[in-house]
Amino acid sequence: MASKKGARIIITLECTECRTNTDKRTPGVSRYTTTKNRRNTTGRMEIRKFCPHCNRHTVHKEIK
Image (cartoon, one colour):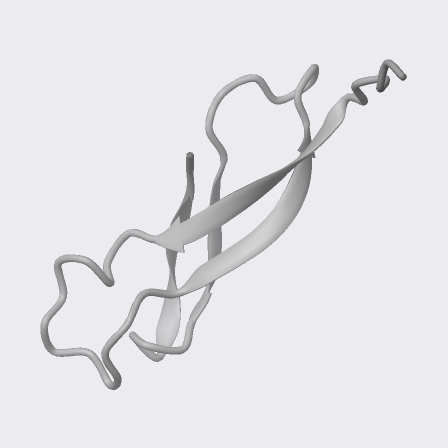
């Protein structure tokens, strides 16, 4: 059976400051999953979201 590819795909957003910041509250990297429309948003997404490891809102970028 051939599967029909939809326009929406699941992406992972990762905190950009968790990799470089050593003075974090807890060790680790914050990641969120969401969906995006690949026809409307062709580039990589950047969203400001809360990072529980940094304990503040930071920029989360789309990773592969």
